[in-house]
Amino acid sequence: MSQPERPPSVRRDELLESAYRYALAHGLAELSLRPLAAAIGSSPRVLLFLFGSKDELVRALLGRARADELAALRRVREAGGADDLAAAVRATWGWLVDPAHRPMLVLWTQAYARSLSEPDGPWAGFARQTVEDWLGLLAEVAGGAGEGGADAALGLALLRGALLDLLATGDAERTTAVVERYLGLLAAATR
Image 1 (tube, helix red, strand yellow):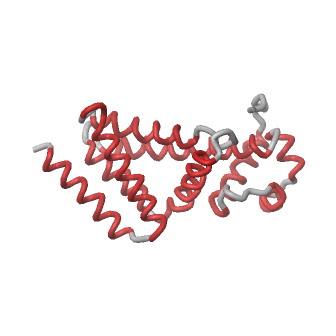
Image 2: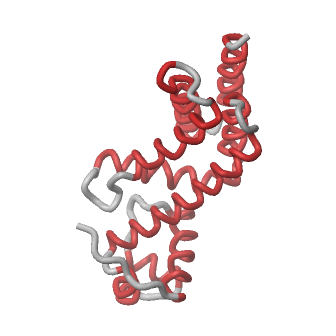
């Protein structure tokens, strides 16, 4: 059960940012308060005071990761064109394949998997929220194309599959070719 949200505090915000940078470098899967606290210049006791529990700290970190994800999706949306699903998929893939974003994507993948395997823990709902976020972007640019937004869902499935493949293999050339192949088929289907 979630505890009441703590009042805002500058120190809490500073530690959350530091903890987020730590999580990007080390992941969230095996997060332990002692190493985290030592790395960010705090103590487990202070973290527990400011966040209430380790689960609440994880929830705050997931919220912080989701804020980055939503900001990235907004930038992609703006760059991809107002009503062009192919442009949105291409722009999103361009962001995903950029090595600078790899730590955030690995963190996202860890959180996504944990959300599926531990639906009652601090990870609860993360996977569903990210699906809704990404599908919302693609459905918006697709204009509801396809039956029941199927084109947007297909674009999302392609991006997620290619992303998992990219993270597992590091093969940006092959995964980009797959995305471009899909976009070519999409273009041919709409002519």
